[in-house]
Length: 274
Image (cartoon, rainbow, N blue to C red):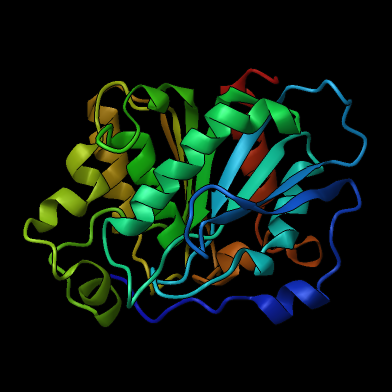
């Protein structure tokens, strides 16, 4: 079940201390013609000029109706400090844009990475897609549903879903009704409908006190992937709510949940860094 939209976290991002080892290296890069089809790039501070870094593509949440990449520098710098090129895009949101517009935008970002990742020090065949809440939904659809990327899906080596909705039809709350209610076949909008054999290794992170996106979403996706022989890990963080799952990625709040460490360890493994 999906509740009210997540806050854009702009004020939080402005105030919170960030990782010195990660820096923003590019801003406002267009991956499409729309005003929201832009992305920012973060890299390790001392990355070599000829680096071919593994890439983490992170989609923020906001019930497919709010959010801005400008509120997530704390995520970009945290992951970049651990040796990754990190891409954080904006994407089209409601009410003007509904499913599948935001998934199409996610696919456009992946295709942009495949075409241009090396220009920014990344290895475009070595991508981990990730996201929080509605962003985890976008990441999951790109990882498990080949309608969006075709052969470019081969570049996705892993999926990290943070408090994500993957099995929420029928649509029974305002956010899901608004974003998906006009689609004639609700089952086709669900990651669990498409997940199975051949999908990338997956890490699903759940807040033990999350009442916005219930744990059954991750459990259902994990069951479907495992049935197809896909390696899946689920990790629960006791006492952490929905928004707390992403704010725990900020440097001062990592004592609450090891989300950065768990994401990095998984990403290193599936991209071959370790």
